[in-house]
Image (tube, rainbow, N blue to C red):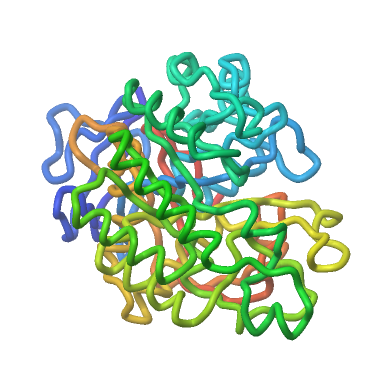
Amino acid sequence: MSQILIKQGQLIDPANNINRIADVYISEGKVVSVTDEPAGFTPTTVIDASNKIICPGFIDLSTRLREPGQSRKATFKSEAIAAASAGITTMCLQPDTNPVIDTPAVAELIKELAEKAQYPQIYPIAALTRKLEGTELSSMLSLKQAGCIAVGNAQQAVKNLLILRRAMEYAASHDLLVMFRPNDYWLGNNGCAHEGTFATRYGLPSIPEEAETIALAQCLELVELTGCRMHFGQLSCKRSVIKIFQAKKYGLNVSADVAIHQLHLTQDDMIPFDSSYHVLPPFRTEDDKQYLRQGLASGTVNSICSDHQPHDVDAKLGAFPETEAGVSSLETLLPLMLRLVDQGEITLEQGISALSENPARVLHINSGALTVGFSADVCVFDRELTWQVNAQNWKSQGVNTPFWGQDFKGRVTHTIQAGKLIYSLAD
């Protein structure tokens, strides 16, 4: 029987309002104590966490692992290793795999791939519509029964609002979470950059913020109509934060996240013709970035995700609009959060909460906290440890990141998933 003792670390567990030097005792995959040694406890593994932070393992609400269908870009195995090295113990997988996650058989395949990669806590998000085509509802109930944690349409448009309404009514009747990235496909017009100075200067097809805010406003009206649980993913602009604030104020059952890179980069940071800055939604203005940060600090935006999208080299070659959007971002999640703390934008407790407690609440799972009896998902990290994003340190198969070659402060030293040590920096 595996028993792990993590000793003398600074335990930060926002869900239980704990911030003190403590020991964590783990037995049979569960947290058994965070203060006193349980009777008969004989650790098989001891982790010295002196001068380190102990916190709940991170829960990532939006990832792509490129399997099934695009294993040339990445695999469950490669990205599970990257996630473990980043302190991430649970990942939600977007439905735009190949084949799409729109049948129980594909959901079962996802579970098998996760087990083979020895990283079982990968939750599939089911397709809201068949083949993500936006015209016909998927079999949401059977997908929920097959283990899907939520439903969503990834980056794809739902063709009309009646279909979206019916989908939300169906989801509400089965208490299914809808995860929705607000984007009006037609206003977006296949753009690749924010409708602003950068796009104008380099003649790039652009995406106005209204593509996000109008889709968001329509969806909020439907939330009020249908009463469904709605999570808005990867917000990118000021007016979206304001709309979420207003919706929460009036009692709508909504939550929201922001991708970590959107909290640090704007159109002004983009290097011309460098496709590692090609993301959807696009990097917007300094004002938008500051509002996203304020939204996070106030709790309006309650979670941070990686929005991890690894690509092979070919996908990022060519003219900027022809390249594929997305950043490989699992491994920069923690240090970029800590950078926000060092810049005084949020407290360390808020940052940890946005990566653990709050995503768990969004998903309605017993995780994101070191509560006695909960599954032992734990991250131990050194706030002061510096490292560089380079080929020696990088685990993900996708090297498409605008932070390549940069120095970061803060690194995970140990990751425990369901009581099993899945990563140790010393190994």
